[in-house]
Image 1 (cartoon, helix red, strand yellow):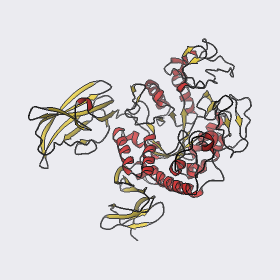
Image 2 (cartoon, rainbow, N blue to C red):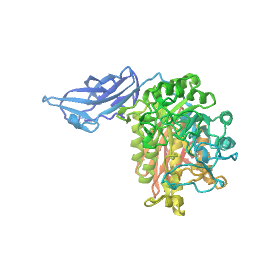
Image 3 (cartoon, helix red, strand yellow):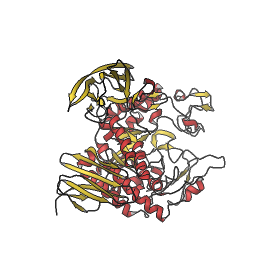
Image 4 (cartoon, rainbow, N blue to C red):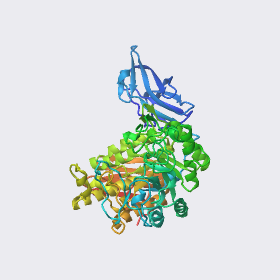
Length: 624
């Protein structure tokens, strides 16, 4: 039996489909197999409906095929399907992704059915993004932390070691600041634009007691160490002049315990939920024993969880005339990234999407999801992030995992299988609009992951002090260049975590959140990222071109992006030995856009030798 959902002979159209789409499905029996009937059995999970479609026997190229047309549901749905086989001898069996199996062992195929009328702005996926952890990027103004929420300490030297050890009470407080600010980011917009950046994603910027600011103290106020609302508006306005959008981090699943709303330590003059059941914010939180026991994000008492569907909270964050979502879009933001989207109710995300579209139809909504978001189950609920009413796209952690798996295991099939699964499961706009990255504030730095050899050091003291030795640095840098090439050439927005382009190192939080090394950058690496950014912005094939694979062979990975008459080919060898590669090429020659080397095609074929750990980005060229 043969059925491959990625093979156009078996299923058209490819991948996820809009509601109501008619799909043609074909099953090919094995040689000599006496099938009398084949029936498609499809289960719509959300509506809990079963449909059966009879497939009709026909002859194709001298071979029997059972073919039929299945019409996707009229509403967004996640459909799981398999085939029922009826044999000439009267027997029956089930056929799924893992072959013929008893029903209880069967693996079914997934069909994502999305709202085809839902619109996704194209600007994000086409462009280049840059993520900034605001306290650590650039300091333009020296400020005093006195009188601010939290027990803050300010480093005097920008290049000092971050605090990483627990305090006397055994707590990690994240209370040391370096004073990076919004004005500092504005000062460096020329630099960011030189990298080809078109979107700036900022980790939280609202008032908070910690340097990461995920413990929001006041959603309506920029943290005083970062500046003022006027500074934010100036940043957005100047960024717009540079062709750069700004996306904010929306931390709406929890607040800080030291916040206007909870006010556990009484820092703010109003009455917080931790101070009185009569507080105007009391219904936002769930206490099991007032005031000391309450729901908190993953049990962290500094991060009390909120009841997102509480009418007052929903109105404050989303629905009100001057809600948090509305206010900062009006102030200049072009979108939101939703922190811990898995922990936000679907109705909450849908409401944010609707309000964003009211304020600015071109605003972009991204969710933090670490897995395949098309079939994610969170808190026993199948999520609907990508079906048209919630997020436009997601953070693409599977992309990061796939790139690292390819480079560290030297197996291109790791990347291919992971990304083809997403391409098949995601609506095209979500696949082409994903936030692709290789490092974030929640992961170790890319250079460290790719270069460090041996077991990772166990203690924080060791991890704080270790830098790659010369051999590790060289190895990591070669792999990093390959990783960046794949990211800039692949569908989705290539997203650089601040300083990765300058050669920053670091293990996990907080070592991945050091200050940007102004004056100590790796300028050769910056030039490489600058070239990639320029190519991404100059070539339609890299921004929006269709994807096809040319080679998935051990350490060799090559794929093509094509748009109109233009094509770009990424060719990578992650191995320690040279590798040969050949593929059809309809131009007289090819140019490696990264090095300027030219290669002549012969009789419509391009033949190359990729050096050890070498990558090329090939574009059309005329013969010498």
